[in-house]
Image (cartoon, rainbow, N blue to C red; front, side, top):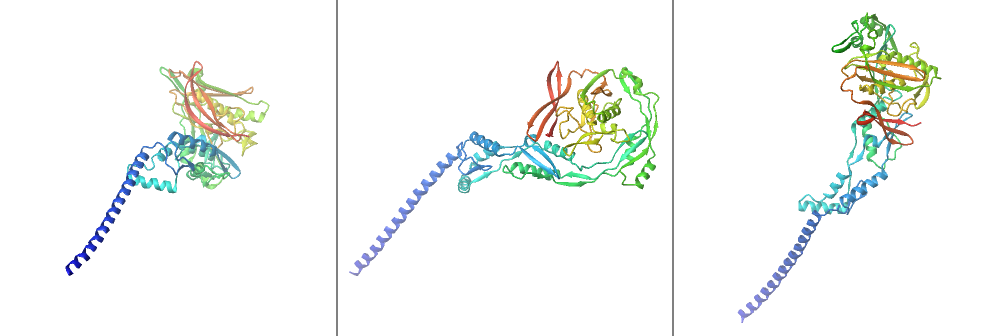
Length: 501
C-alpha cells in the first residue's frame, strides 16, 4: 500500500512536468514562426527597397518633399521649385553705393542631379542591417538634403575686383609720368580694399539661402596702404640710352629711335625726404634727342593698316573736344615693339590743368558731373577696339559703371589716373605704330604695321547681352574672327556689368 501511494504521487509530478514542457515547446515554436515571418518579410521588403526606382518616404531636398518620386520627377520638381524661390541677383552696399551681382553672371546653380542620386541611394548600401536601420530612421525623423551650389569662382573674383576698382575711396598707388621736361611722381593714397574671401562667403551663403530676405550685403573692407615711392625702380624704368631709328627690308624690321632720358637719383630722393607727404613731385629730366626718329622713316617702315576704329563726339562741347585732342596727341606716333606693353595712363599722363585739360562731363558716384579731363575715356575706348582689330593681347581693361554714349556695351575701356589703366601687348612679330586724330566729330585710331600670312581673319569685338533688368545690364564680349563677312570663331574677352540710369 505505501508503495502504491508513492507511485501515485510521483506520477502527478511527472504529468505536470510534461504539460509545462509542452507549453514551452509550443511557445518557442510560435515564436520561431513569428520571427521567421518577420525575417522573411524584412528580406522581401529589403529586396524590394534595393530594387526600387523611387525615393523612400521622408526625404526632402532643400525643403522640397521628393518622397515616392522617380529620378526624373524629382529633378523636375526641385528645379521648378527652386527657380520660383531663388533671387536672380544679390545687392551689395558700400556706404551709399549699391552694386548688383547677377546670379547668372557667376554661373551659380544647385547640383540637383547629385542630390537626387543621393536621395535614391538612401538605405541602399548593400548592408542589410545598416540599410534597414537607416530606412526606419529616415521614415521616423525625415532627412533634408542640401544640394551643392556650384559657381564660377574666377568670375566671382573678377566681379569683386571690378567693384574694388570702382569704390569711391579706392587705393591709389604712387605713379609717375613724363610731362614736358619733368618727371612727375604722384604720391599714393590710402584706400579701401575688399575682404574678398569674406565677401565671397556672404554672397554664396545668400544664394544658398533661397529665403534670403536681407536687402543688402554690406561689403566688408579694410584699409590698404600704398607702397612707398621707389626712386631706384622709377629710374630703372625711365632711364634710356639715346638711339637713332632705322629699319631694314631684308628681313623687314623697324628699330625705333630712343630719346636718352636720365635724372639725378640722389636729388630726387632728397626732394621726397624733405616733404614726404606732398601730393606730387616734379623731378627735372635730362634729355638727349636722337638724330633720326621713327617719324623720319616715313610710311615705308609701317606699310600696312592692321587695325582701325572710330567713334563720334559732340563738336559743340569745346572743353571735352580739347581733352580728346590732348589725349589723342599723347598716343599719336607711339611705336610699340614686339612683346612690349602699352600703358594708356603712362603715355597720356595725369590729367591736370597745367597739362591743358579742361573740365568736362564724367560719371562720378552714379551721377554726371564736371571733372578734369572728362572725355579721355573715349580715346581709350577707340584705341581698345583698334587694338582688338590689330590682334593685340589685352593686358588690362575695365568697363565703365554706365554704358557711355559713344560706345556699345562691352566695347568700352575706362581709365582712371592712379587706379584703372588700359594696357595691351604687341603680340605680332613686328612693331606697330599708333596714329590718333580728333577732327570733325570723329575720333579715329589707326594702327600701322606689316601684314603677315597669319592675318587671314578680320578681327572685331562681338557682344551678347546675357541679362537685362531694371537696374543692371550684363554683357559678354568676344574677339570675333571673320572671313568674307562670316564669323568663324570667337574668343571670350570679358563679362561686364553696367548699372542703368
